[in-house]
Image (cartoon, rainbow, N blue to C red; front, side):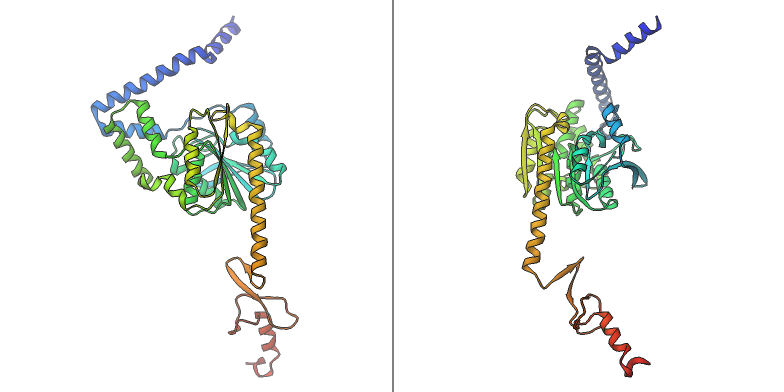
Amino acid sequence: MFQTVQKATNFIKNSTNVRQIIIPLKHKLIRTKFQILSKISLTWAAKQGMELFFRTHRYKRPEREYKLLQNATERFTFNWQGKELAAWAWGTGPTILLVHGWNGRGAQLGSFVVPLVAAGYRVVTYDAPGHGDSPGHQASLMDLSESISAAVGQLDQIVGVIAHSLGAAATTLTLTEGKQIPWVVYIAPPLQPRDYVYKYAKFLKVSPQVTSLMAALMSVHFHRSWESLDIPTLVKSLNTPLLVIHDQEDKDVLLSEGAALVKAWPRAELIATQGLGHRRILHQEEVIKQVLAFIQTQKTELAQAIVINQTQQPTRILTGRVSARKCNQEGCKNLVLETLDKTGYKCSTCLIDAELFNPALRWA
């Protein structure tokens, strides 16, 4: 008897028809709440709207993600604003960072792990603040961007980033703040962060006054104006190669947004898919092949650039940020970097040797 009741309960919980009833009812209750709040206080409604906008929701991991995380080469955390964000890594070699989107998890991009590791890369992903296994219940676009900056700063040899949805917009802000990432791949990237505030306000069915107040409060929260977050304007100065892959049937983020981003970005290309939507696109084999081909192209172009640079400047050797020349002493192969020699032609070793064996200076 108990098992029969349990099965019936589970059926009701998982029933598509039941969810189709519950979800619209929940949305109606939320809208009613904000209509009441708006009549009491526009500011109060705007504050409540902002808090709800930033609130994250965790969804159950599918079995494939559990298996992926269990097989990670290492599990670690990195610090962001005093909080330890959960991170995982697979393989060895130059590091590629996988960045998830809103209400997502790093393991959502797990289909890229095995192919990238096989190609000779170390793959790292993490759960953003308020997401997955990381602490918190709220996050914003700026939080995601700053967490990416923290990850890039604390990881070695980041050669590229593969980002999904809002994670792409956050990566763009990271680039415009000066973080150096050789190339980026965006899957279903949104264009204008501010547009989503208005879409959200439309969903709540709040008044234009509440919408404006909510946008203003978010600007204060970000410590930035919305104009300074205008992505099409920001990306015009970027020289980072970008590949955008976007599905024609994506209902969460329209293909037109990805296409507009590519048009504004100086070194960008677009691949449009069909029938994959906003999330299935992360697991499609052909998409992964296109990403690997793009990465190989960037690797080849970088190698060619190094060869060309060495051919054009055979007498200059760059070590870090310091240009150096060879010591002019016969038989010496040292480079003259920081030296006591005022002429700059003799390395410190040769200069000291000369002074040590100079009778006039030996006992000085």
